[in-house]
Amino acid sequence: MGEKVPKLRNWSADLVNATKTIKDIAELAGVSQSTVSKALNARQDVGPKTRDRILRIARAEGYTPNGFGKGLKQKITENVGVIFCRESQPLSGNPFYSRVLEGIEAELALNNYNLFLHLLPESGISGPPKMLRERYVDGIVLVGNMRHDFIAQMREFNLPIVLVDPKTNFDSCSQILIDNEHGAYEATQYLIKAGHRRIGFISGDLERASFKQRFDGYSKALRAAGIPMRQDYVRAFGLERGYDHVKELLSMDDRPTAIFAANDINAVYGYRAIKEMGLRLPEDISLVGFDDIDLGKIASPPLTTIRVYKEELGSMAVRVLLRKIKEDDQRPITVMIPTRLVERESVAVCNPA
Image (tube, rainbow, N blue to C red; front, side, top):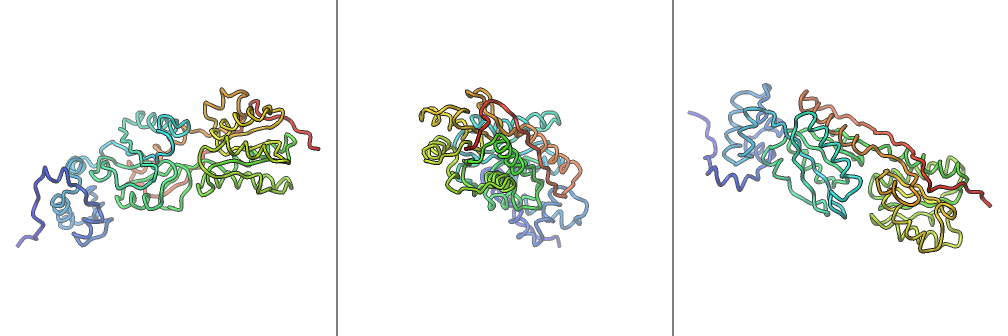
C-alpha cells in the first residue's frame, strides 16, 4: 500500500492561508529542516521517497503555493529579498540607507535579478514577510539594526542570508561591515592633531553596535594620545538629538573645543545650536561627523567627516549573496568596507591654554 499523506486542501484557500514554514513541514514529515530545504530545492542528496513525501506534505499544508510550483521546476527565481528596519523616517528620506539601497538595486540590475523590498516596522517586530513564506526569493539581504529574534526567524527558511552593518553574533551568516572603530579613531585623531584636547562625543544609543564601535574608536584615540576621557563630554541617547547634545556640551563652563559626532545628521543638527549660542564654527567649536551624507557637503561651513562607501555596502552584499546562490556556497564570510577621512571646513587648529 502507498504511504498515506494529508488530504490536499482547496488550492484557492491555500493562497490566502499559506503560513506554514519549513519548521512545520519538517515536524509533519519527521525529518530535519535541512532535509526539507534540500527536498524543496531539488537537491540530489535526498532520497526520492523522502523527497516525494515532503513535497506532498508541503502541498497539502499550503506551503508557498504561488512561488512553490515555479521553484520546484526552476529552482532559481532570480529574485532577491531586501529587508530594511524602518527607523524614524521613511527609507526614501534616509540619507544613509537610501544610498545603500541604490547600491543594491544597481548590482541586482547588473546581474538581471529582481528586487523584493520589505520594510520592518519601527519596533523591529514582524512575522516572516510574504516573499519568504511563498518562496519568491532565492536569498535575502538584511540591512540595519535588526532584532536577533527576527534574524533567527529568517534563518529558519534555510535561504542564503547576508547582513549589512552593524555586526551581529550570527557567525553562520555572511556580513558586510563598516570599519566603524577605525573610522572613529581617525576622526578623533584628526582633531587631536589639530591641537584639540577637550573633545566631546555625540551619538545615538550605544546599545546600537555601530555607535558603540564608533565610541570605542573615539576612546581608543584619546587613550593613544594620553588624553583622559571625560564622561561628561559624552552624549549618547536617541537617534537625532544632535541639537540637544551640542547645546548641552557648549553650555558647560569647561566646554569642549571640538566634538566628534558619530553620524552626520547629528552633526548638522548641532550647527543650529552653535549658531543660537552666538558661537562660530569652526573658530569657537570644531566639528567632525561620520557617514558623508550629501547634507554635510552643503552645510555652512561644509562638514569634515568620515566617508562611508554606502553604495559599495549594498553592491558588495548582493555580490556575496549571488555567489552563495549560484555556487551553493554556504561558508560565511565577513567583508569590512574601509572608511576615509574627508577634510572640509568645520575644523580649526586649536592652541590649548
